[in-house]
Amino acid sequence: MPPFVPFTRREFLTLLGSGTVGALTAPLALSAMPALSRYARPRPTRAQLRWQRDELALFVHFGMNTFTDREWGDGTESPALFNPLRLDARQWARTARDAGAKAMILTAKHHDGFCLWPTMTTTHSVASSPWRNGKGDVVREFADACRAEGLRVGLYCSPWDRNHPAYGDSPRYNDVYIAQLTELFTQYGELNEVWFDGANGEGPNGKRQVYDWPRTWALVRKLQPNAVIFSDAGPDVRWIGNERGVAGERCWSTIRSSAVPYIGASGDDVITALQEGHADGDVWRPGETDVSIRPGWFHHAAEDEKVRSVENLLQLYFTSVGRNSKLLLNVPPTRDGLFHDTDVERLRGLRAALTGMRAQRLADATAVGKAVDARRSVHRIPVRPGSAVTVLELAERIEIGQQVTSWEVRAERSDGPVLASGSTIGYMQLRRIPPTTVSQLYVETVGLDGPPVVTVRAYAG
Ligand code: FUL
Image 1 (cartoon, protein in one colour):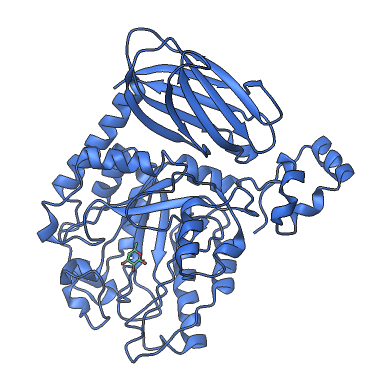
Image 2: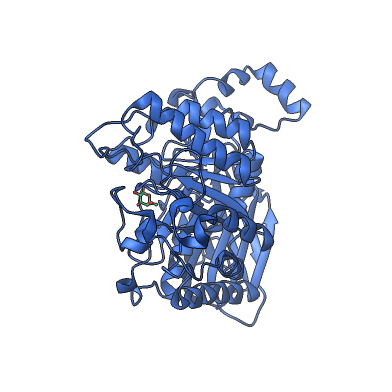
């Protein structure tokens, strides 16, 4: 999808005159970099902006594996096993809202092929289970609960299906998959994110399935035009390259589309590209950091003592949202169909820690900065006296693209001690620093095309 480039008429005419407009449609050559104006760089679509500003979403892995105590089912599981007697999607949604999350994504179908909604495409679904006498629909309850709590709704329907008999017969299974997605995209209201992985293991009979991604993505665009599409190859949101909750220290929301040419592309170069993106990327494709609150994606009672601590969750927030990514934090319901008390308590703790930090704001300023030369500018940010600064937050106006290639924050003056430094900023950079009492922050930024607009905040606590 072409990037959303909100030109003013004047900008457009200027570009026409300068001959830069062609760069919008052609992939950017490295050598073309210096000549590019900021107006030619990719910018986020409205849907990408909204997605990024949500900062935190919860991922909900729930399904047959919850009942078999596995991570990957093989598709032979009996639907009779699925019976979450106390399932309460409102409890998930309330917890998510209270944690500060703005959206949730549910595994409507995982690799074992068991569908959490009464699909017409297979009998391997909730309709064949004892749960709610076969009349239940987890996707419906999930979507209704999200909306009731003011959350946006996302779905993950695994393409790899170890149950469906058509899997491995590529055209036939692709029709099944499209039919499943069509049900999900037409019966549950507006989705804000559709999540795809490239999982493509051997089918039950050693069959190999070739997915039809262009067809799949076209279906999303047609039926859910406001949803962002996540996969490692985009097109809207890219995978961050690991499941440890850590975005690259350098993290561009732009990436060269050729670096991850197809879903499931592998190799060190691909992982580095996913982690860091590229300053000269031809597409706006921000990174999403998916990570679980527990060792596994699904709930296992044996892991009830291994839920991440509040401090650890806070750390994840810093290494994802605080590195220009978005945190998709997995919280798996138990067999009862509820989030576990420990997970709920930790999420509350995360919210309290973030709210506590933001309540102790000592500095908050947005400015273009004073240009020192064509690319370098300085900002002097006054700090409220009384408390020591422990966290620095920097942000760019990403509506107009990502600009900053390096930054440095010093205490008081241009020759004061360096409190923090880095390369990219993007949507947000968060840094902890040793407690420092200052009256002014001296912030220097270097932009790709000129002095960027930067917001600088400082917190105590
Ligand atoms: C992967 C899957 O194989 C895992 O089971 C999990 O769902 C993770 C989020 O995505 O592709």
